[in-house]
Length: 54
Image 1: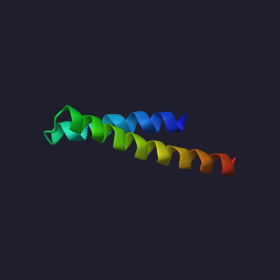
Image 2: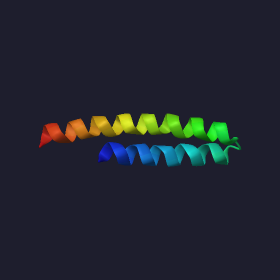
Image 3: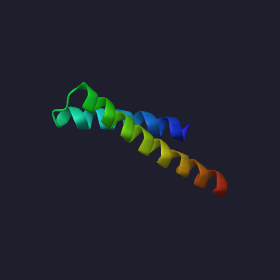
Image 4: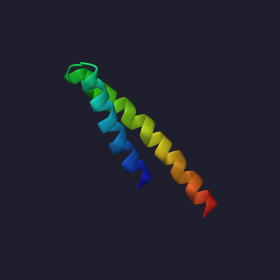
């Protein structure tokens, strides 16, 4: 669940960041994808840490 939430937040954040910087549709898609991958990875690491602690 944390991974899915991280991917969604990352995609939204990347999209809005590219939009604020004046990027076109492909820029927005690239930023959204990159941020989604990064936040999904962080979410996976966080999930592993939480599971190990419980």
